[in-house]
Length: 261
Image 1 (cartoon, rainbow, N blue to C red):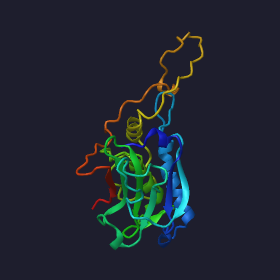
Image 2: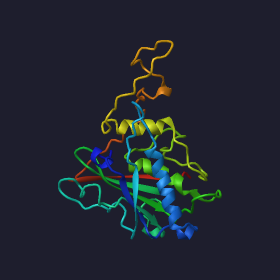
Image 3: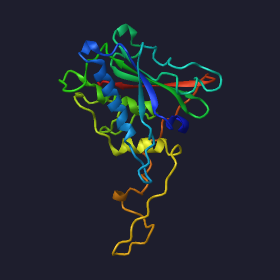
Image 4: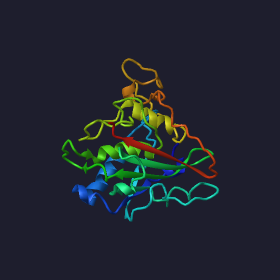
């Protein structure tokens, strides 16, 4: 699954549930900053040739709104599954009561994607946080709390269409560390996954011609990886393959970050 090029031409907008995480002692401003930082990690990913950024325009926080039902931020139609990708909300929702959390109690967060069944193009994405079972933090974190930016860094990978990685060190690994007091650094596996998923959505640009050197390096010769012109190798983890059973317009994928026992 992936967002279409036309959606990537402008910031992918999202809204934040106005209920926030006040029970965890977090101000709404801290919550929004942590979400932006988590999403921004993926915006910074660059691919060859010449450091193309798949999500060049980044992510746009368009404010706080009343909480919406998870996965229902878009209106179904018979043609696209949802009313395009702009006005659907792409909400970041916080579930404060266990009775309202529709997934396993061990799931820290869940991202629900709605996409077209004919080509896998995403039209809506919602991220839900399980505030009923877990406590979160934004800055200095004790071992009994989960760093909010770390959660949104992982869920942002799902937001842009990636599935879980089998590499334990990866941001997109399906089982989080036992203690999450800071964000997990991005790995080559995470970068390769995003670059492979959006390889057909970015337009290659001409690499700058290297200047002549005393060694008379031929103009146009391949540059070293430090020069930024070599294309990266494809991800060992292919983009998530999705299936549609009895659905005419849209398919929803649910990807959660589950705390191990």
